[in-house]
Image 1: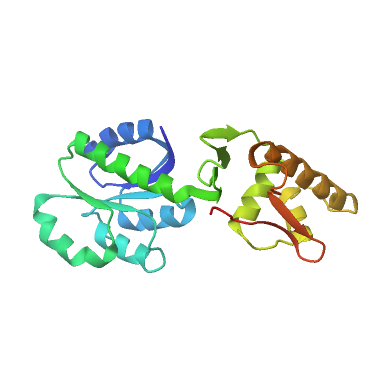
Image 2: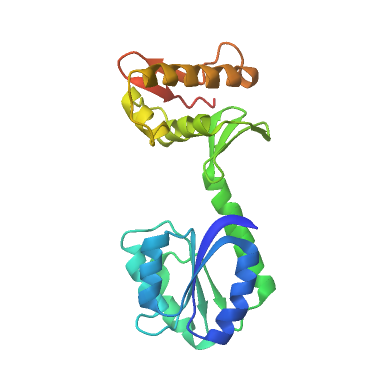
Length: 231
């Protein structure tokens, strides 16, 4: 099963019901719509990783849904399901940056190939090199050293996730405290908690990076940062 979500829009119930079973075996979360209006609503609410749209839907068709999404989102992959008669319509959709279009009735072998290729591409985008042999997987929130996953506590994960979101930039102590201990009322003790947490992370990473490589840098006035050095 892929650790991604997909929004599937199809108005034909018989086709939709059969396809849902396949998608639920492939994806962690599957969101379903049977018209273009509900598709846009679900897209805004759920923020799916992939969109699978039938080109012909009531209220708003799949092509118009894609056009509206592309006004503010050029990255979310869109796969269009289309009948043979819709081929000419798709010629006008070049600017929509569709990931693929799949002819109906769907060839499931072809569909699996398209999805596998797309997932491989998406996985590569989520792999962020930090050091020569150290990678952050932003999709699964894990730190990998030479293909081995480094075990992190939840708070260690939150620290690294925040700093990598702002890679090479310093994050102030207060911002980090509010992010890590979001369910607590910060007091003077949290400064020391943060210091100890950063120390434990750096100590843990020394095993992989060496004694002289401080994974998280600190500045008394600026806060903390992770510096990307992959050369």
